[in-house]
Length: 321
Length: 296
Image (cartoon, rainbow over all chains, first blue to last red; front, side, top):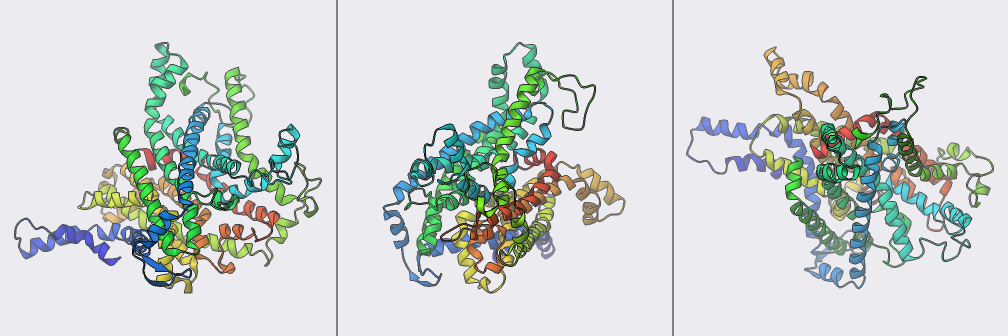
């Protein structure tokens, strides 16, 4: 950690353009050290808690580590080959793609509507805006547990409701056991992930809507544009920066999402409802080295997704600044 | 779109009765109805959480929407030593409070300096901060766990490690939001104070920080909530039930064979209350805070 803190002034000193006198050199050193009291603590914290674990993780991914965390020696690339040869991995990766695409896509789509709705003027707007924060305020863990309880095959309120509607014919049956079947479990968990992602996304889009000048709408109205035209030609293009930022943040959060699947199905049966994050955490309990290798792979996936996304939308993101 | 809506009477919020209020148009009524329905859907799972916590033991597994009578004893006996709620609330307060203090102490000077000064490495620093926003504890959990073991941190209370982890992963958002806030305050105000004899640090405390207070409050509350709800690192680092923060305590009600649902949801209600209060404080600023933090 200390070497990183001093790295900055070193970089400042490394290429003196011309030989300077002692006092000039000293002054330049002082100038390059001046930011340290201000930004040094932040760099130190990042180095200790973010960068150090990255380094340790890369190291660990090449080591043979016992379940208790004791290093038994080098493993070369065996951790990576073990993970990549794992017969469950292809299914897990496909599921991860479905999970991320479905949750982010559905969340953004619904949030566009919700932001529009809560941007209107109506009595009680403050209260209702506060109410839709609920899934953001409650921890995701808690929301996942509530849904697990509500989906209980024997007495869950969702099944009670569906039974009243005649959709579920009997309790404790296979059709009532939503979390027992991988396909319906995944669908429900996607729904829960959308549910907890909506408040933040809606609020980001609301913030975006408020940056659109009212005069533009006024002009559109004077020109006789229909509401749909106004939305397509004014709202959507000007909302793009907020939309893209919401999309990027959701991509990262959903990819890294842990508590929902962990609490609702624990990734099972087998690995049939696991995403790559759950798979990694599961490996950690027995094969720390393989878990580290899987983390590096996950990390690479996140970086690739985000980089691709930023690249595709570079121009709009620059406008956002 | 907002401008096209027939203007409802100005104080559109629920600010008490307005005897002379014009009747809202059909369109406003429809919009309001849709907004209320959506809001109720968002609340329903948490209402079910409360109802379950209030179910008498004999009715826990009943197939009714509401129990025949409510039982408040869960909310009383969950504070007993068997459930460890008291220690968990304290631990969570320590972690979230400690992380919030640390973030503020670290982020404020960094945001101030980067917003006010052009220095060598400024861009690199902001990029480093942004990079930590991409990384999350989940993807680094194995590294964090190994570092924890390497430094023998399991010998001291995991609370300290969790304060550090939560502070570090919320630093980016705080620096970003404070950077935007401070950047929007004219530097001339401080210069005027410095002409009046204040030092730079004095001017920062006297002028900039009071004006930037809304930004500071927003960043403090977001950090507190994130640390309060953090799960995966706490789950990984705490092994002793006496040191469980609230999220790990909730997880622990999920036993190997059965789940203690009533206490699980009773504790959940308690864990949610501080967050709701904090959100109520910044309600009007959530939108503005996000604009400053992520869009501007």
